[in-house]
Amino acid sequence: MLTPKSSSTRLLADEYAKNGFYCYLPDFHEGDSLPIDFLQNVEPPLKKQENLTLAEKAKNAAVVPATLGPWLVKHREAVSRPLIDGFVNTVRQIPGTNKVGAIGFCSGGRYAILQAHGPSKDGESVGGVDAAYACHPSLVSIPADFDPVTKPLSLALGTKDSLLDVASIGKIQDTLATKTEIPHEIRVSLPCLVAITMSSTDPLRASYTTRVPRFEC
Image (tube, rainbow, N blue to C red; front, side):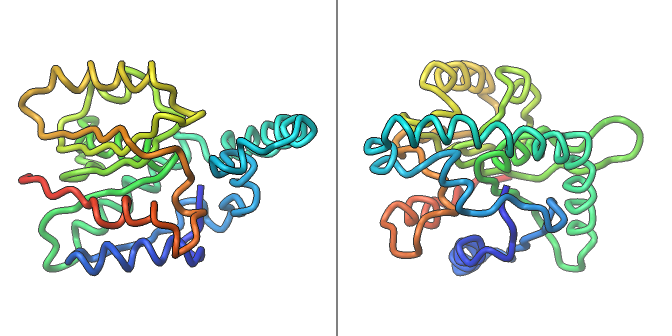
């Protein structure tokens, strides 16, 4: 949901790069990412959530669907998936490229999971990464998005995520538990926050920047 022009997005990329990765920040929203202040209405920080008045909750309940609904339609999977697949294919063609991974947050987390399905089998090979890391993924279909996973997958989930409840997390765990041949991990510990909206000094940011999975793939 976020733009690569966001300073927070670039800070995260810088941290991953310090771990030895080449990092790219493609603009799959083509200049139409949701503003950071709106995302604070979608999923406010926990302390703010606890102190919201009834009037503020009612305002968010009205504003969020009116803005988010049309945006999700505009950037639906049929539109976004080909852009992501094409980008992955382009990266693979860069001289010196060995393995390609994907990291996604929120709705981007779902697309990281989809890339962990591997290349599409319809016609020529399209998309598919060698490993994926999804942080508090939203809008996922369970088990449909997880059954086809064929590549190493790491998930960072929160117990207070309004977009992915504890029961859904349990279903994801059950689904991935059957994939004994595929390296995977599920870390259920982080409170739900849209990590990109954190300040650079927020201690929880370290949970996303220091936990880069290292799978053999």
